[in-house]
Length: 302
Image (cartoon, rainbow, N blue to C red; front, top):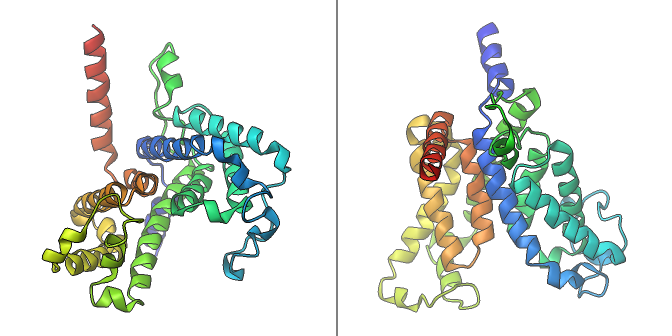
């Protein structure tokens, strides 16, 4: 029992390399920066003059998903200022400037805008806000920070503290649950069982970036992709937990989300989901890539 407890304690709270978390921060916060920067000119969507007012925002949600209180405590007249502040905070975090309190403030503002108008937000907003919350408890800006370039001495990076280690594990579990839950939910639909679910998407020009009508000539492609999608999502937790299949499943996930981003125009959602993959990669491989990249840059300068 003692050994089991030690392994359990090491799994959740043991020190970890923070480089994977830093890569996730760059991609996640960079994606959120891009999304919110593009909405600065549509700030009216978050006011009571929009088609769904702030007062009605919670009413459209089912009781199960309705938050107990609002984070959007500021008046509509502050929307533009708060939105610009959020963009600035996300930009700083992308560069590795800030820390737990800066990221926590960014999450509070982000959650406030989401609650103001659920109708103009997408899956990328919800998933990104979820992982931004987890990350606000971590030392995410310890690595890959632009500030490290201006320090006189060579930085000796420390491993994660107890809270950061716990949150890294929680994010790994969270993304696994998201995939598994999504896969099992698909099994409730008859169109996924007969393999025609994806055709309802690909045949709709409003949901795709190109004409997929040519797939009628090779109809067997649709059910194969549908079944592979379900298998990928349902078995994601098991396959990434097993080291021998982890990299293969992550590569499959990158290809899966690349297809969604390119052919459905959901690039922010794709990069948000893929950002979590860095938490599963071998830190030694990431360290080698960083060292080789920095060495190439320094050699180019000389």
